[in-house]
Image (cartoon, rainbow, N blue to C red):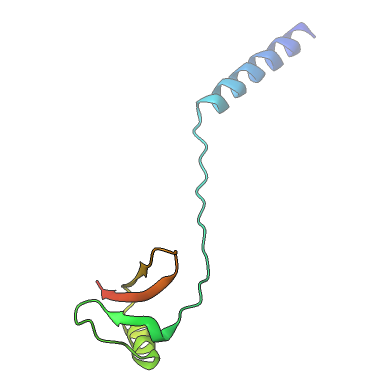
Length: 85
């Protein structure tokens, strides 16, 4: 009986010390959905306006694009600047 108690004690200490050395991490991602006003999309390089059809073509063809927000002093989005990477 003493041997079994001793072995269980050793196993409990060993498993506790092993779990304390292990690094446990978890990564989180968040996503949000924003409605885009297509009348406010401009090309950053040319400064010209982009229609909704043109934007959808670009979004389908090129996966690596960025929409920058231009915000006024009240926090409202005045226009979106489309940049292609």
